[in-house]
Amino acid sequence: MAIRIVTSPRGFDLPCIHCGSREGLSVLLGDVQTLSCGSCENEVALDQLKETLNHWQRAVAWLDSAPTYLAQGEHEPQAGAA
Ligand SMILES: [Zn+2]
Image (spheres, rainbow, N blue to C red):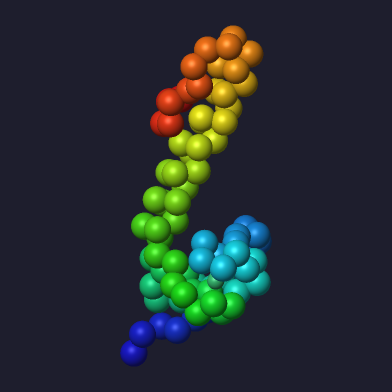
């Protein structure tokens, strides 16, 4: 019988990547590779979170570098440039 202990990672204030709810995410401690959303009932796999973070990191790097390029009147930075 699988361990069914469910907890919510509320301390992280994490929004669901599907519906944006910050109330419904929980993790089954028998499968810590997947979060479940109680608001939209979708699952969020750890790999999905990593992929989402990777996209955001690239976007943040682009946004961080943009003022320098804009101030110099140069071409805009390329996506993925650090
Ligand atoms: Zn959701």
